[in-house]
Image (cartoon, rainbow, N blue to C red; front, side):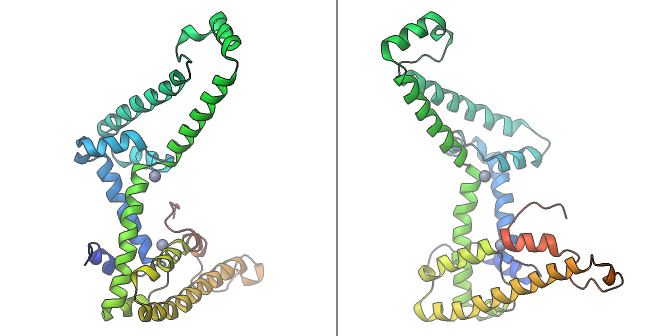
Length: 257
Ligand SMILES: [Zn+2]
Ligand SMILES: [Zn+2]
């Protein structure tokens, strides 16, 4: 049997009344990954090699900054990340015979361009743009979440197929956000047996459609409450329909609720 971690948090998330229990788990995974990035583990060489190379996406840089008052661990991580990135940028220029310092300006630069043509500059720029684009796409926190979320989805499917009590919770849930609905569908053929797979599709598709229709009706009801003729009408379950629908469509997002 593969790792069966997260089965307790999965069970707990399904016990809660929410639009997507996997979103509850993903938020926890994100929190753990943020804590890890600037916790004691950040002093471990393996971890530092990773953060020096990948850095963080803008979203997670902001979350790390807002995470706690003590800025030292984050500063240490940023410091060595920047040293590595500066060196890589410099190396690209040097690799094309272009200096990254002042001596390459003015007449000498004009001479070099006349000698080598502008080709070297062009190539260096292409490689640098490529490097910066790949750096933009890497994030040590995103990668950790993605890795653990993958296992979590697999374990959810495992619980669904092996534990009748959990299956009951699954069927009686309010469905999932579209992101996690997709992840469950994508993983199911690999994680479930053929017979379990048929059952799973018969369960999850009607469950999800029912949930989407319910949320859409709540949003629709919300819009109708702005009609003066409905001044005294009942809001029913529509007061938080807008943020709830956004979360249903997008998965975990930081809405001010
Ligand atoms: Zn979700
Ligand atoms: Zn990220």
